[in-house]
Image (tube, rainbow, N blue to C red; front, top):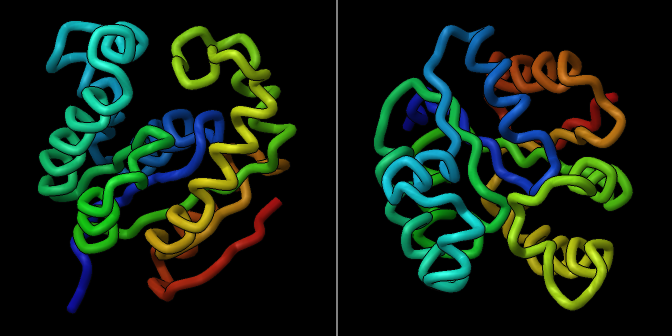
Length: 181
């Protein structure tokens, strides 16, 4: 069975999903969606406020509804939140309704990219961002890999190089791991 022509980007916070997704969508002339922005539009509240009021569980329920709605669309590029893979239903929708790319990034790159971002509630706990990011990666890496059709290393790659690698995978349409720099 041929997969729908949706492109889904998964990976940890700071992997470049939104930045790469916007430019990829522009290049492919497809609409771009960011699941976190859609949740904010639906609720009228930003992600940190949703976490404060409803906790992570409340946010994950909203995220699951948004992922279901967005993955049911056709011919879109979707950047998901870093924790979207935590729920089995999200993983199933991402795997079945499009081509999913895991934007893999090393811990140092993630730390640098998220260092000044105040819109990431999971990074503002008792522990250092480094410990939190490492734990999140340890918990989620296997879920990203299980869900992805392709793995693209974004750590030392240019945005242009990552987009080129994604387009190359779409042309060949085979499951693969691409180490692109």
